[in-house]
Picture: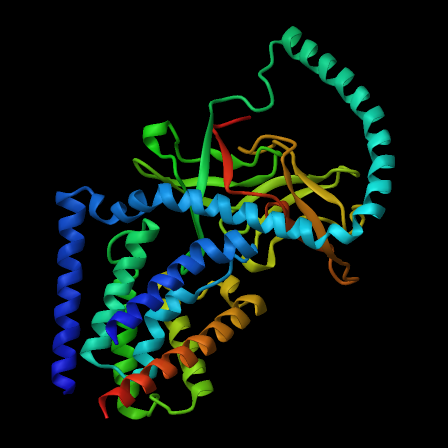
Length: 154
Length: 265
């Protein structure tokens, strides 16, 4: 499972930074950042997925020349918020669209912690639609992988 | 379970902060820059190749209009030839006058050829990296443009082997510009996915959709660089200023290979 997640993350990094802008001229993809948040929301907050997402945050920083901890610290803060919200609400919903929407909400929370505020540029229709559609795709992919993985244990 | 999770989170916080400190004070942040240094050569090669493919496929898609376009272009070509003769004459005159008045050329300073090898939207704006850094004499504030004089952005952070660029779409980017045909001037500011907004255009200023926007050279950016085209103009009776949107020209040209110019005024 972890190996598949790593493959998804590396593919997302390459798609975001190279393929989509280079081949399609599309510069607004946020897929790799969604791969950091979505598994934690979709599969539930476990030590294992926190660890994967943290490693992805560090790899993201590492590949983009960001300072160490620039993304990892906001991610851990977001994880703490998810933890407390999960105590009151069941956000690990079975419905895929709901999962995608919740992922988008926590993505914006991560954005909020990173920038210490919300930049209006991320609230434009283009970015919101991009994040939503990418979150949906990601949730579908994760769902397919998780179902297959669960079936293989039976 | 809850206790164990919080324990893990606290441990991870402490771990990350410890590595941050070690990286900052013992390795001069070289640990975290290593990934970008490793990927800059293969990624810049791939980026340029992918971009070449995009423009190749775009040309194929436009192939059916070629005959009609050819006719238009022939006529356009004749008109441009006469303009070129005029331009050559003006350029000679300009060069002569610059020498006579002892003025520097338009793009003064050192020019470095570089390649973009990462272009993505991150959490703090666009994360654009070029494969040249302080070891190639790149410094903060250098201007990044294409060979066709299209403005891409400004160098924001410089590392040993690579640099970070603030592109024209970024919200931190602004440039003094004018409309090419009318001379209407204002300040163009980045608006991320929306392109750019042109500020300080009063309702009487002549400006229309399709107008070309170029830099004026009144700030730290050299003059006559193509910034973009006007994509939307909104006139509000109650407002003194017009709402003008610009589509950056950067999106229409190849940006894989770029020029980095040290302060060129």
